[in-house]
Amino acid sequence: CSLVGSEMCIRDSYYTDAVAWAEDLGIVQGMTTTTFVPEGIVTREQAATFLYRYVTLYLKQEPIQGADLKAYIDGEAVHSYAKTAMSWAVAEGFFEGYGDGTLRPRASLTRAQMATMVNRAFGATATASLSGYEDVAPTDWYYEELAKAVQMGTFQGDNGALRTNQPINREQA
Image 1 (cartoon, rainbow, N blue to C red):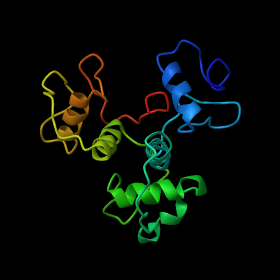
Image 2 (image 1 turned 90 degrees about the vertical axis):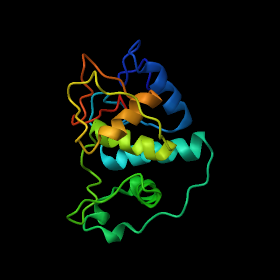
Image 3 (image 1 turned 180 degrees about the horizontal axis):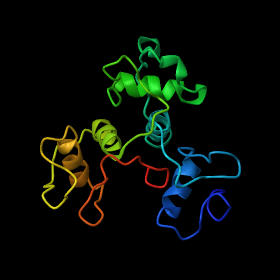
């Protein structure tokens, strides 16, 4: 893995093996040819790209026809590298637009939004109790999505918090 052990990725970090695996498969790349930026915030279009590459390169599944991004006010703002992935993710229902008609492809993705995307992609239905987490309430829009993610093992808390509204970064994604 060219990312691991270089200036791009610190050796022996908790994410080293995952980054090496994802890079070897072509799922993730550095932000440039010399930087990985593990603390960098993941955008909606980047998350869609990671998931699209996982499905097509690792699972070797044929993606469905993508949605027309022109239906969104900012659909043309999707970077060229992410157009196919974002269009597919919208068609699959992994991402939805906002009430104001935007898709916000370059907006940061919160941990709650990432949990929702992953749950939708993998069809999660079982839930875990979130009673030990102080930053989620049953009235939150993402409560059930986080309960599914915790049950599936894709999200963990830290000191009684899931940090649901914090942006997810590249090392976590």
